[in-house]
Image 1 (cartoon, rainbow, N blue to C red):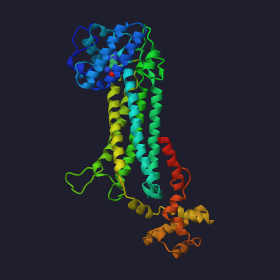
Image 2 (image 1 turned 30 degrees about the horizontal axis):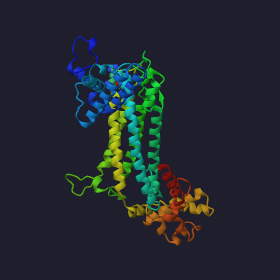
Image 3 (image 1 turned 90 degrees about the vertical axis):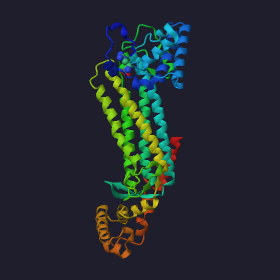
Image 4 (image 1 turned 180 degrees about the horizontal axis):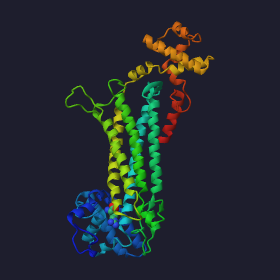
Length: 457
Ligand code: ARG
């Protein structure tokens, strides 16, 4: 045990209490952000004359040395310090002597940890953005080659109308695009510098907050020091964004699992992303998709955990807030892993166009188009709906699909049907006549793909 705050105490802390209180086991991952924040703080203290140029230079050099030693593995972050802030400060003093004791002038661990987390999350949002962008690129590449890969579209998990694989994947493209935009919104809102908030009431030293804001590349400074040390909104926003990313990945995983089943056979997951069974030799399981779906619950859990931790906390800093880190780190680690693996799985998946098309052909996905055919020849839609309903019933009884009926059979049900009905209800027509913007028709799909390409540049 090594503490920064022994002066006021007469007894040693109990080991269990010490361990319970400590955060170094999980906040050690903030060492880069912590040292960077300290270097900037020292440069500012030097600029305003609180430290001499010589003192400032010594401390900065000492901090840079600690950074390099941690990176190289020469210095191990050990758990006898309470948190990463105490560790770095103690090592600095051990390294450069008494001048190191001036590092914490005009600063509290409260604004220090607030800063460290913001620096860390800014980087993580950029990493997430890159991962989402890579997934979008894979989806777009697939969309480009599948504008005429026909498949059934579903509502209520019942075949509804035919569509294309490009159109289906495009729906996920939209979802992940929104995820990027949500993360970028969160980034913009959190991009404010809390350093200089002190414990919560600022400080009597003439700190130059504009200068640290500039050096740390924040777009602005925080304007209330109580909020500066106790704002965790952006972590909740982040976890909410991550939960939505996982919800999207989970929906997509669910579809892949269904498509990969023996009943559907729409896709084959690559061997690299499948696993076998210890007992059933024939099995090839979609474990990766299932685990992504499964980990969604865990990320939602992190969001609930932090929302609940923050509920009812009085201003300003409370130790409860230390509980922000584990859920946030766990969610980030898992979402990054899921995005990475999921992208690899989708990039290597084999789409069985033959199976998809065959499935679109049986199941009356062209029933709406058959009704529209009658409407275009003057039959009111409600009547057309009834006629096609009877036609479908007849097909079911005969074990036929709509396209299989003879013209005589069509005309038995309605005399309005003519030879051109076959052209009207074939898969290609059903899909490619649908050209409202956003629909699967080739003309509309091409416009959308061009737009996506522009956006991804
Ligand atoms: N480990 C603490 C945290 O993560 C750092 C801030 C501690 N501040 C304090 N006054 N005890 O929140």
